[in-house]
Length: 124
Image (cartoon, rainbow, N blue to C red; front, side):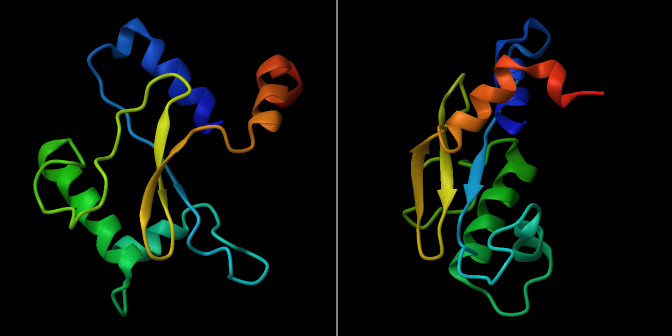
């Protein structure tokens, strides 16, 4: 659903001039049963008890965005990549346990294509 929303938003005339960024969090894959679950990044941004690479890096990108509406402007990214603007089927940041990389937004692409081809099956 994230990719569908982003693709619609970036191609919409109503949102022209609006910038979009997206990311994938993979740093909790070793967490039993849950892995990196939806909204697990909120703990690393707002409820940090002991700073980690992920918490520090996420906080810098988020603070930059809050301050300047651009996650790449402001506090040093400490050598981490510039967060690319999202375009249709674009590149996104991938937050890993010890680094940040840029990846193509194509993970789970087969499932995404099923949803795209059958929207009525997934709505009420």
